[in-house]
Image (cartoon, rainbow over all chains, first blue to last red; front, side, top):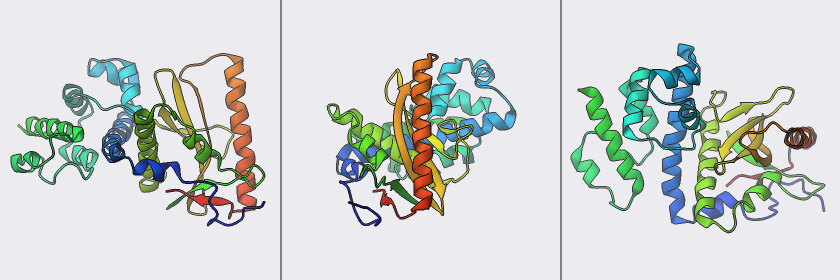
Length: 139
Length: 134
């Protein structure tokens, strides 16, 4: 049997199937933030000309942690995010780009907006921390 | 930019699709999380063509790139892809140990790359041999 037609489907698309799972959307939002942070950290670090080890030393962590962040597979805590932002001089605009996920509300500092999110949405806890971080960073 | 799965006419499979279908069937939660991560990395490439990142690997001597995604503590998933005629073509996928230095693993990795080279050649000969991604 010869397949030369893009309309031919060998089987259902596993990504499309996974989308039917209610957790997929939440995991996607979390992954989107981690991936954008990974790309931003990598780009800024390269611009400065630092190795992962040098950045780790500057912000008092380990090279393995930096490697994990740049892999885009992990979400990090607020303290480490602040140290990264300080170390790489990430601007509020840079951070806004990272957190522009559709989960975070337009106004990071809006209490009303944060309260409107569902409490069982883990990504929103993350978003709240991020909003607090931005508030702290702007002081 | 459109994303497609390369369809091998001889094997009658899309290698990446087959890999994803068989990913952690007994751990649905982890499976969904991994598929969401991989999907978001594909989307990142769609939205930022040409942008460098640590999770996008360039491969010396090969005309394709790889998306790297951690599977667990010790293994990394590699999705090999190429950009051809405005399409992101997902060519092949495999996983390998996070750290390795044995000849056995190196040979296994190189074998996957060589097979992927042939997939890319075949795709360029028949650019209709694909299936739409999601």
